[in-house]
Length: 218
Image 1 (cartoon, rainbow, N blue to C red):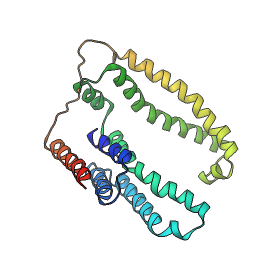
Image 2 (spheres, one colour; image 1 turned 30 degrees about the horizontal axis):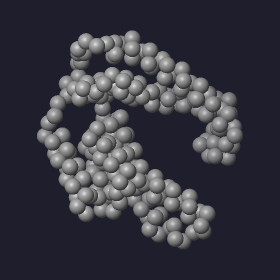
Image 3 (spheres, helix red, strand yellow; image 1 turned 90 degrees about the vertical axis):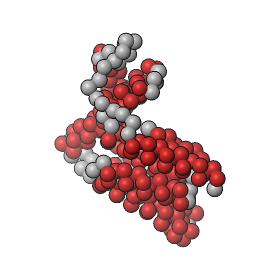
């Protein structure tokens, strides 16, 4: 969560240059250490591609195309560390660990419950999307991802609208399930998860504090 806060600091402060590069490489290293090397390398290649487009391509194309490239290579590049940190949190932290960690931090229930519902909501939405895609393929519609780009109106009608309808029902079901499990009860909660603050956390926290200090000094 501290890493996620640091990445949001990068976004809001529009940190660029060597500090941005170091942050992205360290996040990619964290993916590799967590046996998610494919994801880390993919994000790293996207980041390097954005840098190359920013340095060598934008000035060589027309104004209309350059505006689109600037959005992807500059604006989205600022968001990339946040996306990487969020993905790392989702892929390496179970809902039980996240819930226990937030409770140890004395997080108010008004924040805790929406966060837990959101964490469960994203995988559910991904699953709903896959079910809709499978149903469309079964009917011979959108057999490839390129068809979605070629037929935006049908994509909105057959994919987006069903997902929006499903999202409302999914969110309501997850909220009811969370409340049924007693997540909002006032008494002390127990958990089978075991978390703690160890040497890796101290190293990471010290590193991020150092990054913030360097950014303020430089």
